[in-house]
Amino acid sequence: MAYTSATSRYYNYLNGLDYYNFILSLEKELNSNPDRIYKKLLSIREKAFMCNKQNMDTLFSGNIATLDKFKSAMASFTGKFISSSFMKEEYDLPRPARREAIVFNSPVQYLFVNGSLTANDVPISPKGKVISTILNNLMLTPEIRLKGGAYGGSSAFINNNYVVYTYRDSNFVNSLNVIGATDEFLSAISPYMTKETLESYILSIFASLDQSEGELDDAMNTLVDKYINPMN
Image (cartoon, rainbow, N blue to C red; front, side, top):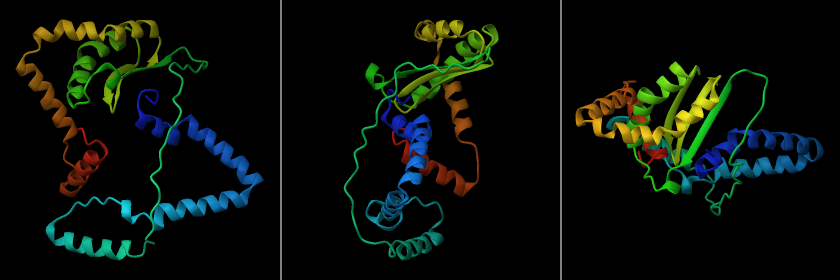
């Protein structure tokens, strides 16, 4: 996903192989130049914890009675921050290779195929959840798992990415052929997708996403989801 999405490139840099390589380089520098690492950590600490109230966003979940207490506590908390500002950082992270493969000694494969939405003039929309659910139920699971022999497979719309993946897949050639025919499949079933059928998919997705977790947890989870994914 990091090939097509800036968000995924950032995530990959913080969690993937790039991060692993960064830790290795940091370890070497820690042994050769510990003073530089120490000063850099102090600088990061200052930016992250002491001087960031001008750009800080706060999410709150609670009732009216606790809101006033929260505001008072936040004023006391941020009052300890040093009033400074920093230039906005621009991150130009390198894209990974368009095609990558890792070879390991196993009779099964793990396959991941990704396409950019914006590059193909596809709007980023919650409707993708409905499309991916239809594909998973009617095509990918029957053709890749039940017929193809893979342990599982699924599709999803994530940020700017349309992704399809399989795991423990002993017949990845079949999986690639199935994935390559998803557009033809959707075109073929489109005339049979009645309003009632689509509404049943929408309701099932809504039920899976809106599971009750308690009033405060539900409110906070909704706030966080909207903050991270404003298009949803």
